[in-house]
Image: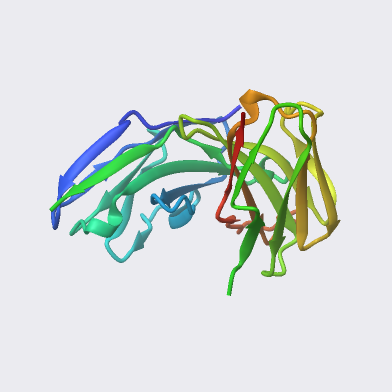
Length: 117
Length: 117
């Protein structure tokens, strides 16, 4: 079974600076997807960024980018120019590419990000 | 326009009662899910339905019974509620993963906070 580990329960960063959230995962599969979701105090789960394992190029979405290291099974999220609205819980998630395994996301424990003004 | 909606958003009830949470998606997706987020914010899959057919039942007590009257709806009925059922329940949907299809992203509803007294 796949597992996802986020070793940083809490992180904080000064507004406008850069922060990196860590995520590692364990799988025996070669084809899969990785995601970062954001959960602000409103509780809504919001997709931040997605990476396909077969793509070597790291995904980017505006101020958000990932460092995907497939051999090391590492998938970190970098937030540049941090803004107050980035404050939230961030969850790393794994999804298999097989039919059965693709029916669920496996989540990490989450990292609470605080932005200091 | 709300993509994935859940009702109610808050539910407070006594131990032993039976309650239902409703979920509807207007994205035309084939697959719907229920996740449970516990008090430590950990998210775990409960059920997955594809075209009204149950695909995943992740060792959930049989007091929990999902029902999918059509592709756009997936309701969760809980019998004989227990204190440990207190959590936030998220419904999600995705386009579905037919054999050979690679891309799929899950979109989440706003969550239902269930409190059992």
